[in-house]
Length: 165
Image (cartoon, rainbow, N blue to C red; front, side, top):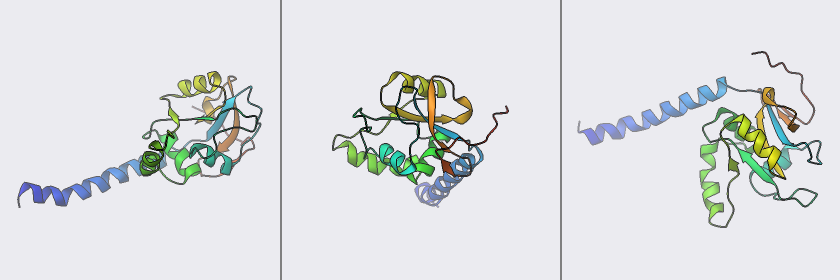
């Protein structure tokens, strides 16, 4: 069998294997997520439908008139995968066409940071921002307004959880 023909047969199998490994590792690493805003933010809670609109960039202003600045982790981050799957109903890779289409109309996807500390600092320092972190990483610089449990349940009420290491 010629090399190119062999590659045509093997490539789909390799792609499926990679997707399977990514899905398995994503499923094994779920945490309780806290959706966070700055302490000065007037909202005490947020709803799932509102959060979805914010992250699809369909709601761009808070009730007080301030611009909303949603923040994400990189597409391959397990917290991002959990957040996207729970809130937006799809994994980040499946959202590329959506963002590519909006980009040409002047709408950019949410800003990306690379660590919990960077997320907290961005939220704390950027008026109107909203993001998410592992619930065990919350500190006094931000306040949680929504919770995403590891089993997919969502709530605006503080869940009962432990941060044992």
